[in-house]
Image 1 (cartoon, rainbow, N blue to C red):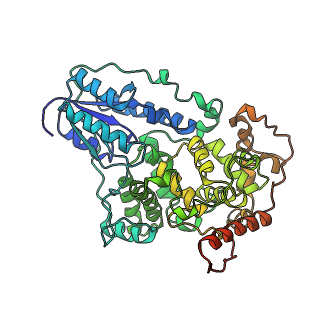
Image 2: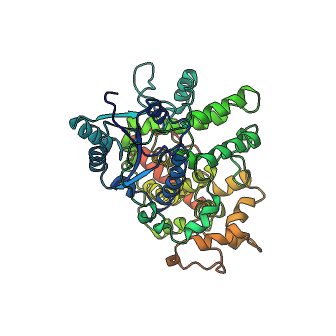
Image 3: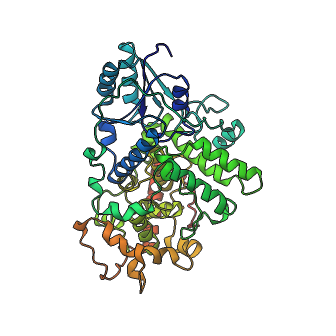
Length: 484
């Protein structure tokens, strides 16, 4: 890059010093580097749990920067105005950042880049939040992939680039610009009492993320494929929290797992799950409407319900269906939810309760500390049937059947649903501490009965699907009835 002034490193979802390609390149130039995080309107729009979790990540990242001779500058306001003012204040000749690919950031970043260049300030973004550039993985015909399996084969053949070297020093500017105090932003205010409940379940910061990866590789990679669907078992990596905020690099995760796999200590299924995340970002880049509208437009006329008492009972983990309620309560107690449970609670909302997937998507966006705009959107549409690689609408998860298969001893349900245990444990009781006081929940209250039986809910969903197919396909195919 031209010029020899300071470089502003615009921090976003990349709260790490290792495997951070853009930051490593900036550091290697030997010029002064000013890391800045901007609390702009797009960031303030985050839901309560991710906003709080971001604040914790920023605190940890600030300490990490101090360890390499730097510091994190905090500024609040629209990114364009903040960056232009900071460049003028510090004499910086360049602004660089890690690239994101969601609809909220692309237009903002384009406007920032244009404004900086108009002032003669170099502007550049770097790949880092994903392993592969979503715009750079193409089919043989030159388009983007719409189905996961060929996407996996394509990127597996490409291979992941090596992780970027860890940044061990950043040259400071001659004088540091002023910074807001992180505490003044009150990023946990909307979590209220729930923050104290969720906090012990988190692994905040790059060092904690590295320990989490190491523990998973030692403990669970070998049996990952067989055990990952059982929510009561510690069989998953739980790295979604750290990948969401960039506290660990996806290329570092890939290569750490690959080394074990090549040594015979696991198979490639974990890599496939990592690539599922890549596929979500690939689709969000190429079809940004997936975040807000049916990916398949033929679903636009489907008779999903809007708000209802049933949807509110689902939100509160009070549907009367134990596996569904356990999943929702796990989210309030730990800030995350097991992937099998996410599929079950989403299927129940969109199919048994016939509720629009966007209501569920919005609630997850408010409650998950590992919220990811790409994975959240694709996951909800996959289950609802309206998205890419979707589970067909007639394939409806039966929560009772799923419980028999993946929680036969009811350990998961007992862990989180106090009303179903004669001596509920601390996590089951913690649910009542984490939820809003306005819900006025009483742990001594009886467990509710379902608003609709699983059989009736399934029949209603199948009838709605048949009606949609009849409207669009006079020769509709026979429906399959092999409920999952």
